[in-house]
Amino acid sequence: MQFEQKPMVGWYDVKQLMATAVKTVVSGVFGSYSDKREIQAFSKQQEYFDFSEKEEIWMDYISDLGDGFNSTYTMAHLMAMDEIDINITTLPRGELLIMGGDEVYPTPEKIEYKNRLQGPYNAAFPWKKDEPKASKPKLFAIPGNHDWYDGLTNFIRLFCQGRSLGNWLTLQKRSYFAIKLPHHHWLLGIDIQLKGDIDDPQIAYFKNIASNEFASGDKIILCTAEPTWVYASLSGDFDAEQRLNFFIEKVLNVSGDDPQGKKMDIHVVTILTGDLHHYSRYEMKASDGKITQLITAGGGGAFMHPTHPLKKAINFNNGSTAELKGSFPSADQSKRLSWKNLAFPYYNWSMCLFFGVFHIITSWFIQSTTTNPYGSSFMETMSGIDFNLANIDNYMHIIYDSIRQTPTIVILNLFLFTGIVLFTDTSTGKKNWNYIVGLGHAIFQLINLYMWIWIFSIWNLTMLHLQAGEITQSVLFAIEMLALGGITSGLIFGIYLLISTLVLESHPTEASSSFRYEGYKNFLRIHLSKEKLTIYPIGVKNSVRNWKNTGTLESPRFEGDKIMPVLIEKEPIEIPKKP
Image 1 (cartoon, rainbow, N blue to C red):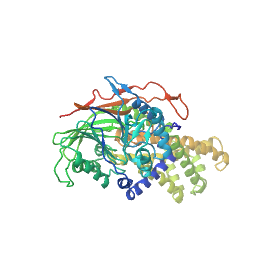
Image 2 (cartoon, rainbow, N blue to C red):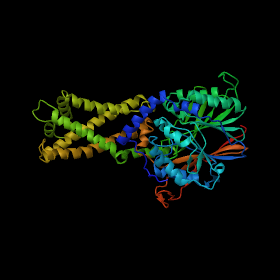
Image 3 (cartoon, rainbow, N blue to C red):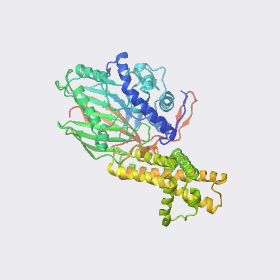
Image 4 (tube, helix red, strand yellow):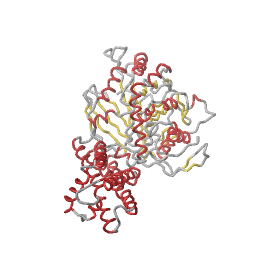
């Protein structure tokens, strides 16, 4: 398959921000009125998938992939290898591959799936014509919010129509599934759409399987698209967590149609998820003593999320408690990487360009339309005032006198100020302090604008002896503001993100997507045997960045530096058959 090797998504690219915002709004509106999960349920029948005859089975779990080529292909290539060596053992390739959501970024257009997912995975593990389909590894996927931005159209086309992704073969017909595993284990993948919602046909599907197929004491591996426990601990909002618990307790763990019916006594031994692009594991202990491993493994290729804001312990409303057992990167590594926000202008020149253009437009209106009692234009007035702290009060009065009767300038200033304030993350971190720092950020952006107008007025008009209205001065001013004004606005933005993530522990997504780090990727290799369920969290600190195509455009094959996988935790996670 011929495809384009894409860089990491630039989340602060203005064009990208606008396109993603539109997709988000549209998908949210139409997803509420036209849910394709309900259409799937009526048009496509699906039973559970049975692999229970095996004595043992190996499985891979990966999430949040389909971003930049280097990181996505690194992980695809690693999973496609016949076996991988880690520091304690050798692990064979999974017979099942589970994709846990957000299979493509930034939005699920057909071309994005092709370039960011299908191309890399086909190249990493090409289709083997001579291999019987029964022998091929099988692929199952659940959608994340980014897969839902087109209403699930392209996700269904790729994963629910019997197609292949490289040599991995898809079987599912809906966006959710149930897999019967050996030794009284089940793996369930649920589709929570955009708002943590599980639709009625999906509930009926799992309810039917639970009532007719589950046996008392069965163990469940549950895959969902969001780490509800992490979001609840960071925001204090436990609604999504409670909906997930309702699904477990009233749909999976109850015999028959009555939610208050007889308990099945199943045990959800682990919940696997992504959405946060790092690895973390909480060990949850329920009030009845049962242990559940809560694992976020969102390291399939997208930018790295920080781990230092993670809470050491979580207390749930139902009496359960969870303790953080491991993370990748570590909290200290995460904090060090956060300092990359100081290079915001380097990573996000498009946003700096936007600030620069906005400042030029605002300056143009100030210079051309304002009237003031000083008998001169704004720049001419400012050029006569020395740039020092003693003149700040005088400068503020001139600004006020110049713009108070010019609605256009007031609106532009309010647009910048309000936009920056609304950007503030008030759902995580230190809440009230977030508002204060957000207001400070907005004020500093306005100060930056007027500071440069003052400096450029003195430099251009007094030092270079140019006239305010001549074309040479106007062009020079535009270049100065575009470069220095835009860059310093970007730097202020980066400083704000740095303070937010390190001090306030807020903006976990915005303060990491800003530098879109390719490293610290991960996936899970899972082994189920008669004795136990073993989970190997595999980490890759550095994605390979020098991939070279040694094949053709139609059949690419890539070679690069050796991938160095490691076991993230000191020991694999073992869940014995009998607790």
